Image 1 (cartoon, rainbow, N blue to C red):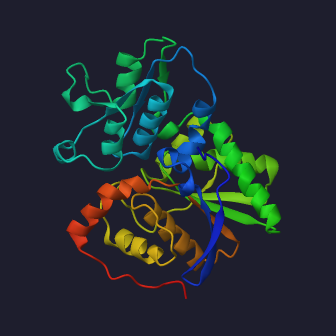
Image 2: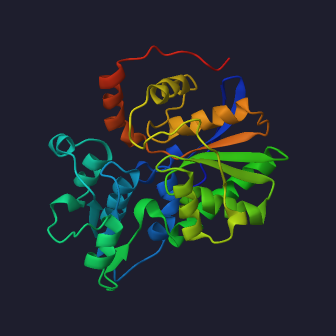
Length: 313
């Protein structure tokens, strides 16, 4: 099971050379940042645990990876969602379908009688967690201190690659949900190689939301990554033609990216170049390609097929 030491490839797009850290080539069940975030759980024994508890979107990459982790460890996964769309339950696809196949118990809180207006995390903390050693709770997207060892290993890989390439500086760019990977990367680089800086953009919420996530994990603001503002406000999970277009442009590089996080990441990186960024850039490909199974048909229904174009020159 490959969970580390992925290759770095060079691509050319919009007249810029970009290095791409191919974490999408990690084991498919833990592709990308989930392999890094969940490395601690994969590499250690938890003899008392019987039930893994998580929450988030019914199409989240973390749902599938948690289901794979539970199956591997012989645990039951209880995964709480705010609402399950009827179309998805009638036509399972993507991460939702794969998690069900792994035996995940996906609980729709909109059908729970004792919810009392609680969000998923609040419900779990007040109604589900008992303090028993048999329960292991992983916050949304793996946003917890257990993610730090695996992400620190990733930082060491990148720092070693930079030395081998004889680069004097490096910007590591990645789009963020909870910001866990970006934060722990920046924190590790501050220790091992301060010439490497992390830039990210807020995909799930706005910049204030992402900053709040950083502070929940690390109070020292000097260890936080730099948040790149998007040119306009995008709503998470909504379909945008410019996202669809940039995803098609990226296909000309020979690397497939996912449709939920990467389009905004590349748009923000493009704007950085337009604003004068000239440092070498390593884009962290965090996997999540299984999500395209459900996202791409949605885009095609709304916008049709796009004609591939070449943008590398």
